[in-house]
Image 1 (cartoon, rainbow, N blue to C red):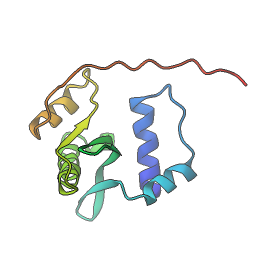
Image 2: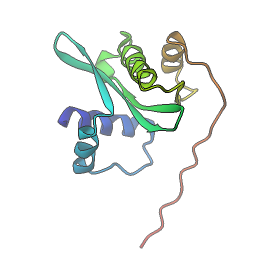
Image 3: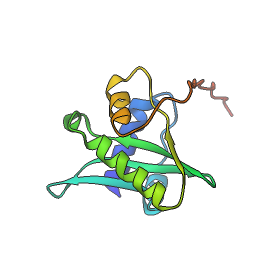
Image 4: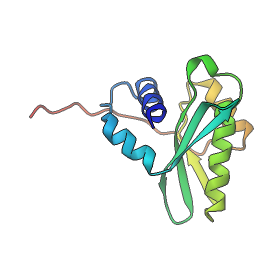
Amino acid sequence: MEQFADWTIAFLHEAVPHNPIPSREHLVQTAAEGQHQFWIVDGQPVSMAGIARRTRHAAAIAGVYTPPGLRGRGYAGSVTAAVVERIFAEGKTAACLYSDLRNPFSNRCYAKIGFKPACRSWHYPRARVAG
């Protein structure tokens, strides 16, 4: 669970650096829900991904993270594909994820396992209101 918390914090710092970071207690609770999977190589976790939300027919993948020193080896694609298999095993007919179009590495990874762009989206951070 500590690994999950550490990697989630690192992921959030990279993906949405302007967003507040959840508390470690919240992250440990999230890990206990069992929605994330780790890809393991030689007994060590090397990448993770999870199911962020479900609808009746689909599920969204989020939190795909591989530490910088382990990137470029196909681990993110492998764990993402494993999460997709889990989604389909639950009877869902679609899996989706958001990808930063400015990141050619993740986009190539997701394309290799069958994801296709469906639409563009934008992220607009809100100013924090004091009080």
